[in-house]
Amino acid sequence: MIAVKNLTRQFGHLTAVDAVSFDIHPGDVVGFLGPNGAGKSTTMKMLTGFLTPTSGSIVIDEHTIGDESLAIKSKIGYLPEGAPAYGDMTVFQFLDFIASARKLKGAYKKERLKAVIGDLSLESVLNRHIDNLSKGFKRRVGLAQALVHDPKILILDEPTDGLDPNQKHQVRNLIKALAKDKIVIISTHILEEVTAVCNRVMVIAKGKIRFNGTPKAFQQQSRYYQAVTLSLSYAADISGLAELDGVAEMEIDKATGNVTLFPEPGHLILNAVAEHIQLRRLPVDELHVETGRLDDVFRQITCDEDGEGEAA
Ligand SMILES: Nc1ncnc2c1ncn2[C@@H]1O[C@H](COP(=O)(O)OP(=O)(O)OP(=O)(O)O)[C@@H](O)[C@H]1O
Image (cartoon, rainbow, N blue to C red; front, side):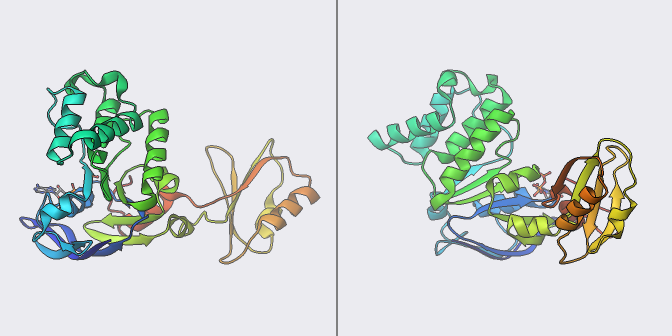
């Protein structure tokens, strides 16, 4: 388990992480979201022992970071932002070097190297220099080095950055498979990654935690949650839809022509909308209930009232 209390990091006058507290348990796959400069990487670097906190505490399985950093580092696999260092090594040399640095030996070392090379599909590039690899392969080599010692805690800074859609899918499945008995913390700008792999969302903005809960609770904060969106094959009189019981508001998207009906709080409007469409024989091609729009919630949580802040 990870227990973080009042964690703070200052760089000169800038407070990059500001009295942050949270607990994370085995089996948790945490999506760590926030605008650029929110404090995600700084928090992750402190969790991995690469950066010293200005104040506050991090306890990992009864070990306190700072006092017992070595014991903690052996439990953690860390994928930093960007490409792996040691670009003049071949992929195999690099992974072998990391495995040795992690004190793996003999048959177990061979077994772990084989496992990560297979899991990340690195067989075809084992003898290539890291510097000459594509961005996607560099990312996969970075993931392999984070996994080689089979750590209990995985901290991954933008793990799917630079991967093509097939590789993204493969890495997400790998993370899901790994997550059963581990803690996984993923920093990402890709909001869909949260619903694809995470069972917990933490949002940080300006160094403070703004949301900590399930992906469902995150989606439910969207004004689109349980709204009904429909598209029409040709123009028709839809004014009656806005008058239905439980419908608070109707919006028409200027770009697509799609109509969205927003429910009053606590109302389900799908049946009433479907009945009205049948009764009035409205030319509806497509209709769906919205699950909530992640970008909408992200903006709402991370932008100040004056509009300051950035979307992911
Ligand atoms: N070594 C450093 N020296 C001075 N300021 C730093 C240092 N590292 C980070 N910062 C500042 O701390 C703040 C938080 O940075 P951090 O890298 O943690 O953000 P982030 O959420 O990871 O952003 P991004 O999504 O852009 O990677 C930023 O304002 C950044 O400029």
